[in-house]
Structure formats: structure tokens, C-alpha cells
Length: 380
Image 1: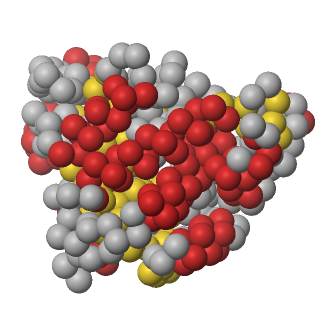
Image 2: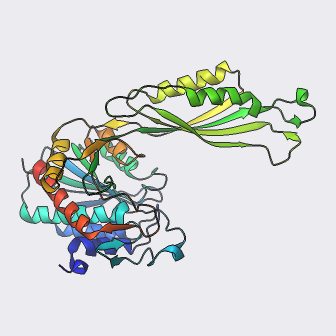
Image 3: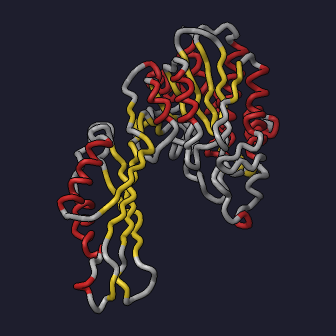
């Protein structure tokens, strides 16, 4: 087969050509909308702030399967290090190269082509097939899928199953699928001291010295022991800032940033209360701001997980590992709708790297997998 005329490769190339650095969409959703409109989808732009989003659906059955994707990409970095320009898609040795090839314009293209083939084969499918596509997944996510979900929930839209196309695979397509993710909670802590001369420490209060005991204890707490699906909750101190570079001045403030990745055994309120009780116990003069990026979610065995497992086993020699590892994804927002959520996508070895790529054979296989999942969930 001439890969250059393969539909999924052609669409992926069109998307990669667009310099859609988050939160820019750069026309990607216009391309997607044309495809979906042609195959009878109702396409509704849902833009918020600087972010373009798309909600599209076809069918009106009792059950809804939504595919979730993003058109935005991270910056290419030093473009001179790329073998070919990052926004000029190229094919070499059976792979498609370009920023977003694996994360996640390739899987988005596979979703769209799979939907087209599904609709051609089953124009009167009983259940509802939908898409949520955003241009702000790689940046803040503030105006992306989270806002779309809020708008859909406000008008009582229902989503039963959600397939997220993030690059979940490690060595081969489908060797890892994800049925949940840990929550992410960040704290911005400011500890107040009293500025003074280092030669007269009795006239000052050094916030760094005051905080050392509390920060050490914070780093050693066992928050929980995890469970069968998640590792234990963990905390990492990711930033410390104090002083102005002068060696004879005791600073008046210490700024600390730390992040929790937490499982379903702990909650935001539990973590917050334990941290603030710790700070109170050390008698610190502090202010703290909490930023909850997402709650943990888990999809137990059910129709969606069964369909994905069946599909992977149909095309591969061995069953996938079912994991909850990695960072956050937009699946955390869809889970708020009560939906079953599973992630299945390309191999993640090159994502966010120079010369990001995806195997053309993998894109073709992923297209078949997505179509088979649609058939299992939407024809009953």
C-alpha cells in the first residue's frame, strides 16, 4: 500500500501541518468538522476564552460513546535538532514524523477515519457516537474539556462510555490500556518570617530555618498504602524560593511548591487537613493556596473495559496490562459525568521529544481497533 494515500495518514499529515501549539488550534478542528459533517454528525463549536472546543454527535440511542482527543501540541523546542521540520510531516522507514504525530494527532486521525468507516458500514447504528475535541490539553486545560463537560452536564447530556486516545502503549499498540488516573493536587505555600541582618539573628526570624522540620516531616508521611489499582499517594517538593541573592540578609519569606499524586484511598480534603495541621503544629506563620487539577478516577470492569480488552486480544497475541500510571488526562473530566473511561492510544516513547513519530502500521491498526470498539458498543 502507498502510505501517502492511506486515509488515516493523509488526515494525520493535514493536522500535523497546523502549528497548533497549545492553546492554539490553528484550523485543525475545521478540518475535523468537515469530515464529521460529511458523515452526518451534528458539529457544535464550544469555544471558551482562548480555547477552541468541538462537540459532535450522530445518532440518538440510549447509550453514548464519546471519543476524546486534543488538537494542541507542546512546542517543538529547538527546531534545528529535528531531522525534518516538526510541522512539515514526513514519512521515513514506515513512520510518520512531526510534532503531535503520537500525542495526539495520529490517534485523532484514527478516531475520525474509524468513525467514517463505522458510519459507512452501519448508517443506522442504534446508539449515539460522539466526539469531544479541545485545543487546550497540553497547557492549563482551564477552558478545554473541563468547560465542555460543565456545559454538557448543565443541559443534562449523558455519556456512558469514553475512549481517550492518549498515547498509552509502551512497546506495541495495546500492550497497556489505562482505566484510571491518579488525582493531582498542588500547594503553593508561603511562610512568613522577619527580615534582618545575618549578624543579628536574634532580631530576625528565618523562615527557612522555621520550615525545615515541617518540610522534612511532610516528605516522610505515609498518606495511604494504595490499593489493587493504584500505588500509594506520594508528595514531591518541586520548588523552594527565598532571599534575593545577598549573603548577609535573612529573608522574610520562603515560598514552597509541592505536588501530590493521590489515589482513591485519599481525598483532597484529607490531604489538605493533614498538611495544614502539620503547619499549625510547627507554629508557622503561613499562607497556602491549593490547586486541584483533577480527582482520581477508576473504571472497573464493565462494558467499555470488556470491549477494549476484547479488541486488543482480537488483534494482538497477548492481553494488555491495565494500569493507572502516568500523569493526568482529560479523562478525569469525563469521569465526572459518571462515564466509564478507558485510554487506548499510540506508543508513547517519542512524545514531547525531538523527532516525534508514530508507526504507520500502528495508525492503521489503531483505526481498526477504534472501529471494532464502536461496533461492540453501538450496535446493541
